[in-house]
Image (tube, rainbow, N blue to C red; front, side, top):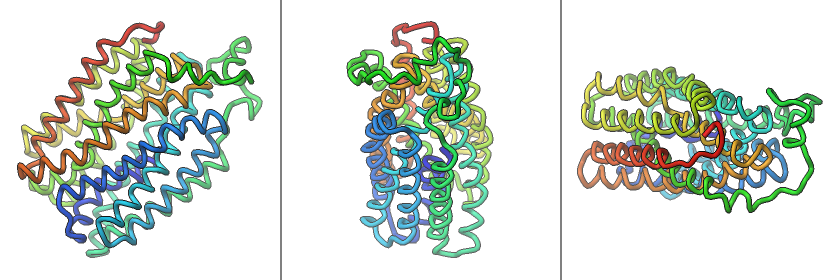
Length: 391
Protein backbone atom coordinates (compact mmCIF):
# COMPACT_ATOMS: atom_id res chain seq x y z
CA UNK A 1 0.00 0.00 0.00
CA UNK A 2 2.88 2.37 0.77
CA UNK A 3 4.32 1.83 -2.70
CA UNK A 4 1.31 1.12 -4.89
CA UNK A 5 -0.83 4.01 -3.67
CA UNK A 6 1.22 6.12 -1.29
CA UNK A 7 4.22 6.79 -3.50
CA UNK A 8 2.87 5.94 -6.94
CA UNK A 9 -0.33 7.99 -6.71
CA UNK A 10 -0.10 10.48 -3.85
CA UNK A 11 3.46 11.41 -4.76
CA UNK A 12 1.91 13.30 -7.67
CA UNK A 13 0.08 15.59 -5.24
CA UNK A 14 3.27 16.94 -3.68
CA UNK A 15 5.38 16.92 -6.86
CA UNK A 16 2.66 18.53 -9.01
CA UNK A 17 3.33 22.27 -8.40
CA UNK A 18 7.02 22.04 -9.32
CA UNK A 19 6.38 19.65 -12.19
CA UNK A 20 3.61 21.86 -13.57
CA UNK A 21 5.82 24.94 -13.44
CA UNK A 22 8.83 23.24 -15.06
CA UNK A 23 6.83 21.71 -17.93
CA UNK A 24 4.51 24.69 -18.42
CA UNK A 25 1.27 22.76 -17.90
CA UNK A 26 -2.16 24.27 -17.21
CA UNK A 27 -4.67 22.90 -14.69
CA UNK A 28 -6.63 21.02 -17.33
CA UNK A 29 -3.44 19.21 -18.40
CA UNK A 30 -2.41 18.37 -14.83
CA UNK A 31 -5.90 17.01 -14.23
CA UNK A 32 -5.56 15.01 -17.45
CA UNK A 33 -2.27 13.51 -16.27
CA UNK A 34 -3.94 12.41 -13.05
CA UNK A 35 -6.83 10.99 -15.06
CA UNK A 36 -4.40 9.01 -17.25
CA UNK A 37 -2.91 7.47 -14.11
CA UNK A 38 -6.33 6.58 -12.79
CA UNK A 39 -7.50 5.11 -16.10
CA UNK A 40 -4.49 2.81 -15.93
CA UNK A 41 -5.48 1.90 -12.39
CA UNK A 42 -9.06 1.31 -13.54
CA UNK A 43 -8.00 -1.06 -16.32
CA UNK A 44 -5.98 -3.33 -14.05
CA UNK A 45 -7.99 -3.09 -10.84
CA UNK A 46 -10.66 -5.53 -12.04
CA UNK A 47 -8.20 -7.93 -13.66
CA UNK A 48 -5.79 -7.61 -10.77
CA UNK A 49 -8.36 -8.95 -8.32
CA UNK A 50 -9.42 -11.74 -10.68
CA UNK A 51 -5.82 -12.72 -11.43
CA UNK A 52 -5.05 -12.79 -7.72
CA UNK A 53 -8.05 -15.07 -7.10
CA UNK A 54 -6.81 -17.48 -9.79
CA UNK A 55 -3.01 -17.32 -9.59
CA UNK A 56 -2.42 -15.98 -6.09
CA UNK A 57 -1.87 -12.43 -4.83
CA UNK A 58 1.88 -12.83 -4.24
CA UNK A 59 2.89 -12.89 -7.91
CA UNK A 60 0.37 -10.26 -9.01
CA UNK A 61 1.27 -7.81 -6.23
CA UNK A 62 5.00 -8.16 -6.86
CA UNK A 63 4.70 -7.67 -10.62
CA UNK A 64 2.41 -4.67 -10.15
CA UNK A 65 4.86 -2.94 -7.81
CA UNK A 66 7.72 -3.51 -10.23
CA UNK A 67 5.73 -2.02 -13.13
CA UNK A 68 4.67 0.99 -11.04
CA UNK A 69 8.23 1.65 -9.85
CA UNK A 70 9.77 1.50 -13.33
CA UNK A 71 7.03 3.76 -14.73
CA UNK A 72 7.66 6.30 -11.96
CA UNK A 73 11.33 6.43 -12.93
CA UNK A 74 10.32 6.95 -16.57
CA UNK A 75 7.98 9.76 -15.50
CA UNK A 76 11.02 11.55 -14.14
CA UNK A 77 12.66 11.28 -17.56
CA UNK A 78 9.66 12.74 -19.43
CA UNK A 79 9.64 16.17 -21.05
CA UNK A 80 6.12 16.62 -22.40
CA UNK A 81 2.48 16.35 -21.45
CA UNK A 82 2.03 13.29 -23.68
CA UNK A 83 5.06 11.48 -22.31
CA UNK A 84 4.20 12.19 -18.68
CA UNK A 85 0.58 11.10 -19.27
CA UNK A 86 1.73 7.82 -20.84
CA UNK A 87 4.05 6.87 -18.01
CA UNK A 88 1.56 7.95 -15.36
CA UNK A 89 -0.96 5.62 -17.05
CA UNK A 90 1.56 2.76 -16.84
CA UNK A 91 2.14 3.65 -13.19
CA UNK A 92 -1.61 3.35 -12.66
CA UNK A 93 -1.60 -0.09 -14.26
CA UNK A 94 1.05 -1.21 -11.78
CA UNK A 95 -0.85 0.34 -8.89
CA UNK A 96 -4.09 -1.39 -9.85
CA UNK A 97 -2.34 -4.74 -10.22
CA UNK A 98 -0.77 -4.51 -6.76
CA UNK A 99 -3.15 -2.52 -4.56
CA UNK A 100 -6.41 -4.44 -5.02
CA UNK A 101 -4.88 -7.91 -4.44
CA UNK A 102 -2.94 -6.55 -1.46
CA UNK A 103 -6.00 -5.39 0.42
CA UNK A 104 -8.02 -8.39 -0.77
CA UNK A 105 -5.33 -10.77 0.50
CA UNK A 106 -6.29 -9.92 4.07
CA UNK A 107 -9.59 -11.80 3.69
CA UNK A 108 -7.62 -15.04 3.45
CA UNK A 109 -5.68 -14.30 6.63
CA UNK A 110 -8.45 -13.17 8.99
CA UNK A 111 -11.87 -14.37 10.07
CA UNK A 112 -14.92 -12.25 9.22
CA UNK A 113 -15.12 -10.55 12.60
CA UNK A 114 -11.53 -9.33 12.27
CA UNK A 115 -11.46 -8.27 8.60
CA UNK A 116 -12.35 -4.64 9.19
CA UNK A 117 -9.60 -4.29 11.76
CA UNK A 118 -7.07 -6.04 9.53
CA UNK A 119 -7.98 -4.00 6.45
CA UNK A 120 -7.64 -0.88 8.56
CA UNK A 121 -4.07 -1.79 9.43
CA UNK A 122 -3.29 -2.51 5.78
CA UNK A 123 -4.34 0.90 4.51
CA UNK A 124 -2.03 2.70 6.95
CA UNK A 125 0.62 2.30 4.25
CA UNK A 126 -0.95 5.26 2.45
CA UNK A 127 -0.78 7.34 5.62
CA UNK A 128 2.90 6.57 6.09
CA UNK A 129 3.49 7.70 2.52
CA UNK A 130 1.82 11.06 3.16
CA UNK A 131 4.15 11.59 6.11
CA UNK A 132 7.25 10.65 4.12
CA UNK A 133 6.21 12.70 1.08
CA UNK A 134 5.34 15.74 3.18
CA UNK A 135 8.83 15.73 4.69
CA UNK A 136 10.94 14.66 1.73
CA UNK A 137 9.46 16.33 -1.36
CA UNK A 138 9.96 19.96 -0.21
CA UNK A 139 13.52 19.11 0.89
CA UNK A 140 14.41 17.41 -2.41
CA UNK A 141 12.89 20.28 -4.41
CA UNK A 142 14.81 22.82 -2.34
CA UNK A 143 18.24 21.23 -2.85
CA UNK A 144 17.77 20.05 -6.45
CA UNK A 145 16.50 23.15 -8.25
CA UNK A 146 14.19 23.03 -11.26
CA UNK A 147 14.81 19.32 -11.86
CA UNK A 148 13.97 18.38 -8.28
CA UNK A 149 10.65 16.89 -9.34
CA UNK A 150 12.55 14.44 -11.54
CA UNK A 151 14.79 13.40 -8.64
CA UNK A 152 11.66 12.75 -6.58
CA UNK A 153 10.29 10.33 -9.16
CA UNK A 154 13.66 8.57 -9.46
CA UNK A 155 13.88 8.05 -5.70
CA UNK A 156 10.27 6.95 -5.13
CA UNK A 157 10.25 4.75 -8.22
CA UNK A 158 13.44 2.97 -7.19
CA UNK A 159 12.09 2.37 -3.70
CA UNK A 160 8.87 0.90 -5.14
CA UNK A 161 10.92 -1.54 -7.23
CA UNK A 162 12.67 -2.61 -4.02
CA UNK A 163 9.25 -3.14 -2.43
CA UNK A 164 8.36 -5.51 -5.29
CA UNK A 165 11.38 -7.65 -4.36
CA UNK A 166 10.31 -7.58 -0.73
CA UNK A 167 6.79 -8.64 -1.68
CA UNK A 168 7.89 -11.66 -3.72
CA UNK A 169 10.14 -12.68 -0.85
CA UNK A 170 7.86 -12.38 2.17
CA UNK A 171 4.23 -12.52 1.02
CA UNK A 172 2.26 -15.78 1.09
CA UNK A 173 -1.09 -16.41 -0.57
CA UNK A 174 -2.67 -18.08 2.46
CA UNK A 175 -1.81 -19.15 6.01
CA UNK A 176 -1.87 -22.79 4.89
CA UNK A 177 1.41 -22.21 3.04
CA UNK A 178 2.97 -21.72 6.47
CA UNK A 179 0.96 -24.48 8.10
CA UNK A 180 -1.13 -22.16 10.26
CA UNK A 181 -4.76 -21.09 10.54
CA UNK A 182 -6.05 -17.60 9.75
CA UNK A 183 -6.56 -15.36 12.76
CA UNK A 184 -9.92 -16.08 14.36
CA UNK A 185 -10.67 -19.14 12.20
CA UNK A 186 -11.24 -22.60 13.68
CA UNK A 187 -10.57 -26.03 12.17
CA UNK A 188 -14.18 -26.56 11.08
CA UNK A 189 -14.22 -23.38 9.02
CA UNK A 190 -10.76 -23.54 7.47
CA UNK A 191 -12.00 -25.26 4.29
CA UNK A 192 -13.89 -22.08 3.39
CA UNK A 193 -10.53 -20.39 2.83
CA UNK A 194 -8.29 -23.18 1.55
CA UNK A 195 -10.82 -25.51 -0.04
CA UNK A 196 -10.16 -26.54 -3.63
CA UNK A 197 -13.70 -26.28 -4.96
CA UNK A 198 -14.21 -24.47 -8.25
CA UNK A 199 -14.60 -20.69 -7.98
CA UNK A 200 -18.14 -19.50 -8.67
CA UNK A 201 -17.40 -16.27 -10.55
CA UNK A 202 -21.09 -15.54 -11.12
CA UNK A 203 -21.45 -15.02 -7.39
CA UNK A 204 -19.36 -11.88 -7.79
CA UNK A 205 -20.91 -10.36 -10.89
CA UNK A 206 -24.55 -11.29 -10.24
CA UNK A 207 -24.73 -10.08 -6.63
CA UNK A 208 -27.06 -7.10 -6.20
CA UNK A 209 -25.25 -6.16 -3.00
CA UNK A 210 -21.89 -6.11 -4.75
CA UNK A 211 -23.29 -3.84 -7.49
CA UNK A 212 -24.75 -1.54 -4.83
CA UNK A 213 -21.36 -1.34 -3.12
CA UNK A 214 -19.78 -0.49 -6.45
CA UNK A 215 -22.17 2.37 -7.10
CA UNK A 216 -21.51 3.80 -3.64
CA UNK A 217 -17.77 3.43 -4.24
CA UNK A 218 -18.00 5.80 -7.23
CA UNK A 219 -18.67 8.66 -4.82
CA UNK A 220 -15.46 8.04 -2.86
CA UNK A 221 -13.34 7.73 -5.99
CA UNK A 222 -14.65 10.95 -7.52
CA UNK A 223 -14.62 13.10 -4.40
CA UNK A 224 -11.44 12.18 -2.53
CA UNK A 225 -9.24 12.25 -5.63
CA UNK A 226 -10.15 15.88 -6.36
CA UNK A 227 -9.19 16.82 -2.81
CA UNK A 228 -5.96 14.82 -2.64
CA UNK A 229 -4.72 15.57 -6.18
CA UNK A 230 -4.98 19.35 -5.92
CA UNK A 231 -4.35 19.64 -2.17
CA UNK A 232 -0.90 21.25 -2.47
CA UNK A 233 -1.71 23.18 -5.63
CA UNK A 234 -4.77 24.77 -3.97
CA UNK A 235 -2.86 25.65 -0.81
CA UNK A 236 -0.01 27.27 -2.73
CA UNK A 237 -2.05 29.12 -5.37
CA UNK A 238 -5.17 30.12 -3.40
CA UNK A 239 -4.37 29.99 0.32
CA UNK A 240 -0.85 31.48 -0.06
CA UNK A 241 1.01 28.53 1.47
CA UNK A 242 4.67 27.98 0.61
CA UNK A 243 5.79 24.61 -0.77
CA UNK A 244 7.30 23.81 2.63
CA UNK A 245 4.13 24.78 4.52
CA UNK A 246 1.99 22.70 2.15
CA UNK A 247 4.35 19.78 2.71
CA UNK A 248 4.08 20.11 6.47
CA UNK A 249 0.28 20.09 6.32
CA UNK A 250 0.37 17.08 3.99
CA UNK A 251 2.59 15.35 6.55
CA UNK A 252 0.24 16.32 9.39
CA UNK A 253 -2.69 14.92 7.43
CA UNK A 254 -0.71 11.71 7.11
CA UNK A 255 -0.30 11.54 10.88
CA UNK A 256 -4.01 12.20 11.35
CA UNK A 257 -4.82 9.39 8.91
CA UNK A 258 -2.40 6.85 10.33
CA UNK A 259 -5.02 4.95 12.32
CA UNK A 260 -8.17 5.91 10.42
CA UNK A 261 -8.56 2.58 8.65
CA UNK A 262 -7.96 0.66 11.86
CA UNK A 263 -10.45 2.78 13.83
CA UNK A 264 -13.25 2.71 11.26
CA UNK A 265 -12.57 -0.87 10.26
CA UNK A 266 -12.97 -1.90 13.90
CA UNK A 267 -16.06 0.32 14.18
CA UNK A 268 -17.56 -1.50 11.19
CA UNK A 269 -16.79 -4.87 12.79
CA UNK A 270 -18.71 -3.85 15.90
CA UNK A 271 -21.49 -1.56 14.67
CA UNK A 272 -21.88 -2.57 11.03
CA UNK A 273 -20.41 -1.66 7.65
CA UNK A 274 -23.43 0.50 6.74
CA UNK A 275 -23.19 2.79 9.76
CA UNK A 276 -19.44 3.20 9.28
CA UNK A 277 -19.81 4.14 5.61
CA UNK A 278 -22.49 6.75 6.31
CA UNK A 279 -20.44 8.48 9.02
CA UNK A 280 -17.21 8.46 7.03
CA UNK A 281 -18.82 9.88 3.89
CA UNK A 282 -20.36 12.72 5.91
CA UNK A 283 -17.03 13.53 7.58
CA UNK A 284 -15.34 13.73 4.19
CA UNK A 285 -18.13 15.89 2.75
CA UNK A 286 -17.57 18.33 5.60
CA UNK A 287 -13.80 18.30 4.98
CA UNK A 288 -14.12 19.13 1.28
CA UNK A 289 -16.66 21.91 1.76
CA UNK A 290 -14.65 23.50 4.58
CA UNK A 291 -11.51 23.46 2.42
CA UNK A 292 -13.39 25.38 -0.27
CA UNK A 293 -15.35 27.81 1.90
CA UNK A 294 -12.69 28.71 4.46
CA UNK A 295 -9.42 29.23 2.49
CA UNK A 296 -7.34 30.12 5.54
CA UNK A 297 -4.69 28.37 7.61
CA UNK A 298 -7.30 27.43 10.22
CA UNK A 299 -9.71 26.12 7.61
CA UNK A 300 -6.99 24.05 5.97
CA UNK A 301 -5.94 22.54 9.32
CA UNK A 302 -9.50 21.55 10.26
CA UNK A 303 -10.19 20.20 6.77
CA UNK A 304 -7.02 18.10 6.75
CA UNK A 305 -7.86 16.77 10.21
CA UNK A 306 -11.35 15.71 9.10
CA UNK A 307 -10.03 14.06 5.97
CA UNK A 308 -7.17 12.46 7.87
CA UNK A 309 -9.37 10.75 10.45
CA UNK A 310 -11.46 9.22 7.67
CA UNK A 311 -9.08 9.11 4.68
CA UNK A 312 -8.58 5.43 3.80
CA UNK A 313 -11.39 3.95 5.87
CA UNK A 314 -13.82 3.50 2.98
CA UNK A 315 -11.53 1.10 1.02
CA UNK A 316 -10.92 -0.83 4.25
CA UNK A 317 -14.65 -1.15 4.92
CA UNK A 318 -15.34 -2.09 1.30
CA UNK A 319 -12.70 -4.83 1.43
CA UNK A 320 -14.18 -6.25 4.64
CA UNK A 321 -17.70 -6.11 3.17
CA UNK A 322 -16.63 -8.02 0.06
CA UNK A 323 -15.24 -10.72 2.34
CA UNK A 324 -18.52 -10.80 4.26
CA UNK A 325 -20.65 -11.19 1.15
CA UNK A 326 -18.46 -13.39 -1.06
CA UNK A 327 -16.21 -15.28 1.30
CA UNK A 328 -12.42 -15.09 1.46
CA UNK A 329 -11.56 -16.89 -1.80
CA UNK A 330 -13.65 -14.58 -3.95
CA UNK A 331 -13.03 -11.45 -1.91
CA UNK A 332 -10.13 -10.22 -4.10
CA UNK A 333 -12.24 -10.65 -7.25
CA UNK A 334 -15.19 -8.89 -5.60
CA UNK A 335 -13.00 -6.04 -4.45
CA UNK A 336 -11.55 -5.81 -7.93
CA UNK A 337 -15.02 -5.65 -9.44
CA UNK A 338 -16.26 -2.82 -7.22
CA UNK A 339 -12.95 -1.04 -7.76
CA UNK A 340 -14.05 -0.75 -11.39
CA UNK A 341 -16.77 1.64 -10.18
CA UNK A 342 -14.36 3.38 -7.83
CA UNK A 343 -11.94 3.78 -10.72
CA UNK A 344 -14.57 5.34 -12.98
CA UNK A 345 -15.27 8.02 -10.40
CA UNK A 346 -11.59 8.44 -9.68
CA UNK A 347 -10.65 8.79 -13.34
CA UNK A 348 -13.34 11.42 -13.94
CA UNK A 349 -12.56 13.59 -10.90
CA UNK A 350 -9.20 15.28 -11.67
CA UNK A 351 -10.02 16.09 -15.29
CA UNK A 352 -13.33 17.69 -14.37
CA UNK A 353 -11.76 19.57 -11.45
CA UNK A 354 -8.93 20.88 -13.63
CA UNK A 355 -11.35 22.16 -16.26
CA UNK A 356 -13.50 23.83 -13.61
CA UNK A 357 -10.43 25.49 -12.08
CA UNK A 358 -9.27 26.84 -15.46
CA UNK A 359 -12.76 28.08 -16.33
CA UNK A 360 -13.54 29.69 -12.96
CA UNK A 361 -9.96 30.48 -11.87
CA UNK A 362 -10.39 28.63 -8.58
CA UNK A 363 -10.49 25.08 -7.25
CA UNK A 364 -13.19 25.98 -4.71
CA UNK A 365 -16.16 25.08 -6.99
CA UNK A 366 -14.57 21.70 -7.74
CA UNK A 367 -14.09 21.06 -4.03
CA UNK A 368 -17.74 21.89 -3.39
CA UNK A 369 -18.69 19.43 -6.13
CA UNK A 370 -16.58 16.80 -4.33
CA UNK A 371 -18.46 17.53 -1.11
CA UNK A 372 -21.81 17.11 -2.86
CA UNK A 373 -20.76 13.76 -4.34
CA UNK A 374 -19.50 12.52 -0.95
CA UNK A 375 -22.89 13.41 0.52
CA UNK A 376 -24.50 11.32 -2.22
CA UNK A 377 -22.24 8.47 -1.11
CA UNK A 378 -23.65 8.75 2.43
CA UNK A 379 -27.19 8.60 1.05
CA UNK A 380 -26.32 5.56 -1.04
CA UNK A 381 -24.81 3.87 2.02
CA UNK A 382 -27.99 4.54 3.99
CA UNK A 383 -29.88 2.57 1.34
CA UNK A 384 -27.74 -0.56 1.75
CA UNK A 385 -29.76 -3.62 2.62
CA UNK A 386 -28.82 -5.89 5.49
CA UNK A 387 -26.70 -8.88 4.55
CA UNK A 388 -25.60 -10.29 7.89
CA UNK A 389 -24.60 -9.18 11.34
CA UNK A 390 -21.85 -6.97 9.99
CA UNK A 391 -23.93 -5.04 7.50
